[in-house]
Length: 322
Image (tube, rainbow, N blue to C red; front, side):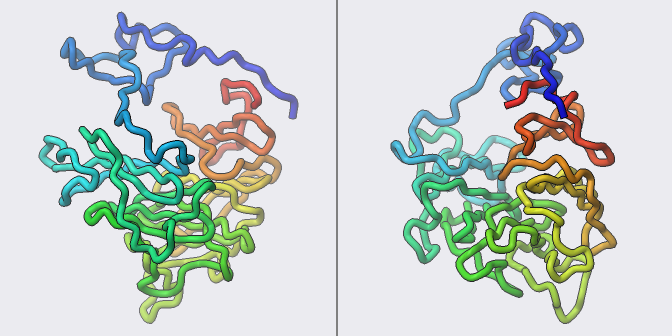
């Protein structure tokens, strides 16, 4: 497929602070993550305004050590693990910035001036493999972490990093190889990326990331299910990423193909091949646009867009090949 070169007008055009959303210049964005839709200084609702990024904390995470993962964890009913104060809202929500660096986990809450290290009770030191990319996903107000060698869970209520253990069934692994990909979908924790079993996928029980029992005494639609013991079978490619698009649909990126989970595999769902020539790069190479499209870096070194029911398209990426 020939490369398509299209000028990207945003963020070059930025957002015109002097105008409302309907009067913005062409090429600006209707949804900006680094802008605010309400101006507290003028007490006005705006289409957007160029407030820019607000620094969460000035202190470095762990000196010069590599930051391996950043994740935002939101919960209620416990004291902020990094100090600070609970936000003044009816829900009493606790918003915690979590960073993994040098194999250790650190947290910071609103108003903190320093990072707080989590207590490591995982049984290894450091608790997470250092110097490599790490992936995590939030489920049940806890952070579930994988790095290919370890499976860990962080509980903000106690500020403790511990080993991820199975309450039923067994953690997916092959000797020393554990999953490296993780997401949350339909209340389940999705896992994949075992280096010796790259086409397999694993879904925990709904709302219980510790339940891996695929053959319970009483089968139910919310039980755990794995690719190698389900009628749907394995993905026909090396799994490189997983995109939880909606409760009904998840997009699975492969090395050179794309698949769709249509419905829950335990409730009549199926896996469909979308494209067998375009794949996705490893990890989380995607974002969701304001138009509902998913934009991703492909194995063709270009940005593509896709939505369920459509073929991936390079012409809609509004970018240049990387």
